[in-house]
Length: 289
Image (cartoon, rainbow, N blue to C red):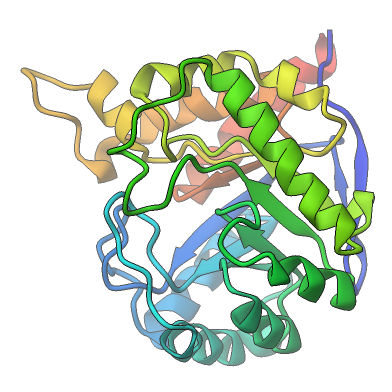
């Protein structure tokens, strides 16, 4: 039984059809301290090269983040975030033919990023950090991805984990949707993300992946980002040592497959070329179910 629903995500220029095939969102961190690449693409030249490579490798969306949200990370001022972000967007210009999503929690950053060409906003705080962000996306009529995070990047792996992770995620996402809708964000501009790895135990991440069909019942498109997360490294550990971040491709592939078969419309990944192949095979299985 095909669990995935179809949606049309309207952008300011064009639209994304969700559900016909899995859309692959390529991650571009323009930070010096990302957990996934350690600042490998910090700097406009390298960032632009990587974005274009991901496009060539089949990415449907590029998600640019200029503030690290790894466990324990400290926030940065909007001025610093923009100083990292805007030169990359300007340098990409007309070279990039696919939509740009900007990963930010700040209304001020979103406002300027949209002006610079961002097609959507990805808020890992689910509008808890800066509720004014909802007003910005409503004003500019761009989609927003609302992610569930328990706590903040500084506290999310230190606070007690939820006793019932599904209840915690569903109720948290409903609150985020309520904030967005009250600010004027249209229902068809909202995408939900369960926030794999953000304030969840390793076991809870697997529970969320197994129960994605329950999240799909909320009636919104689903994005899942499990790529390179710590629970994969722990699961694949050899002799007690977690598999290094850059060596989790096969674990990523399994998580992407499960996400798609569970109803994810978009998968957020680092290894675009490999995960595009994984997504195409999973899509064929889904289409035949």
